[in-house]
Image (cartoon, rainbow, N blue to C red; front, side, top):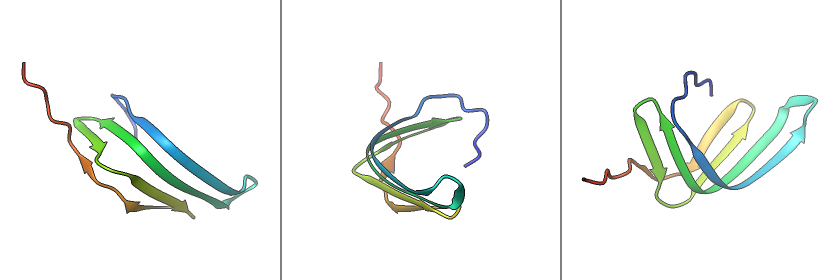
Length: 76
């Protein structure tokens, strides 16, 4: 992903499995099982509700499982 001008914070907690050969980027694969994700980009804030599972292979990211929501603001 090519995100420019990030203006927030993101947090990720989980397990990543990376396979392939560094000298051959087309062989690199990533499997990510995330237990906690918060994402803040521009005016968008998201957090997970349950596990998030992502895979990356050959320039393609697949969201295998995800349930995201905008956090509920706390009233003053």
